[in-house]
Length: 252
Ligand code: ADP
Ligand code: MG
Ligand code: MG
Image 1 (cartoon, helix red, strand yellow):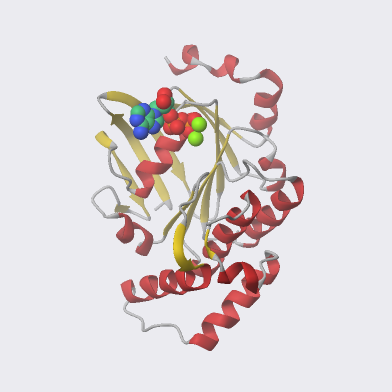
Image 2 (cartoon, protein in one colour):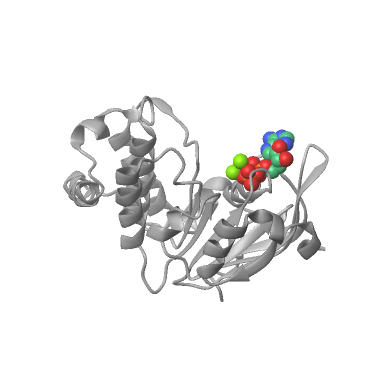
């Protein structure tokens, strides 16, 4: 079984069809990138995977490690091993980042029938993962994402990923708003999570991120579906030619 399989996915928002038959297979251990122009439906795809409301799936299936996740609530999807990082992560006023991370880990453990993590174990895990991402204890005491810079938000998300160790990670426009230093720190954190098992879907508008997180496969997204797939050189081709050459004619 592939880690992620999307079959003929059609999605509407407010009566308008945005996803028009997405087909995608991400085998375990692979990193796939989706590139596409603004408004092509990339974020819609990530929100549907996350289980966000207001998106009407009219056709198709999404299988995570063989399990149909469209029937699951957002928290059940997370427990099943799916993790999503968005361009605009939610702010949680009044909850220290540290507290949030511990609650997320405990929710995952509970779903697996495990007991709560001990404070020393938790502190050790956070310290280890945080150091690699240049996250200091000051940042962890602040409310999650409230007043965080773009780079801090992304680093906090990759820290969550490192602690939860999900089977399938989806990163939507994780590079936007990052300077080159933050991009390197975040990419390094993501790359450290690559292994023979975990799969990743990296969604981006620009080729830049893919110099740092080198994908096994690149898919071109246009008007609500994948119109072309290839190896990493496809990203360079896109950057050189622009999206026009991959548009509706190919999708038809
Ligand atoms: P991308 O991430 O590729 O830039 P999006 O998935 O954000 O594309 O948007 C795809 C299309 O869906 C756009 O035309 C956008 O205007 C529309 N859209 C996205 N979210 C909503 C929404 N909540 N309500 C109405 N239309 C939406
Ligand atoms: Mg957009
Ligand atoms: Mg988007």
